Image (tube, rainbow, N blue to C red; front, side, top):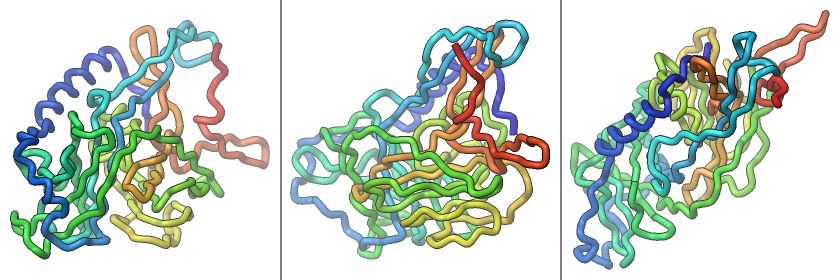
Length: 332
């Protein structure tokens, strides 16, 4: 998979896309004075197959280099400085519901300053991704203007468009605003990956995927800290587990499979995210590095996943796996 492409006006394009999506995803805020402080628990039934995850918008930070002759990344290139990219404004809280219930859509409720719950927006969320093989769905939302210092949310599934006593209700997810750590992966072989336990993690989300027809803005979004990337991509595997496990084709998996479709040989990205007991994303894989190439400069950034199978360098009869993220070309 070639993750290098032309950057040109990537920053401008990202800004334009952000503006468009902010308008589309913007959630209206009702009058807080109308919030019933006694409405603290939505009607419905708690479901352990309905998981709500929240995390703050976090930029992708990379390095910009002047591409001196010869063309292509090499040790003669000039480091110009750091650059960051993000899709939504600072302070935005992102959310994702992973749901294995019969819900057809989801309502997100936000805790208001007086303690009551209020729907976030005037509309229910439709699935952003459906994994038909295992009957799981993913829903996404953004809260651009959180109402409290530690925003709190709960998701409720709608059955045939309505909330009932049988509607699945998610965990309550609270964003404390803590920084999201990197979650590096290790490679027992060139086709398998695993990781070390993360402090305070309640469970992990594993994802083996491919970017498909992804523009620069899509690649930069995929590179951000996320539970999983939902965009111009194909998921070969998504799984939930409470402990580190071995990932790769035909590997046993102790946990819940959200999707596990027929493996087609090719190049994939693998990433893992750690979620704590508050429903916060606390760590995710930064992964290997790649470049977005411009006319005279390029932007080197972590792509949000590790290439699988791993790149291999042959040394006579022996071979060793080289992580692009750990062994970049020397830079000044």
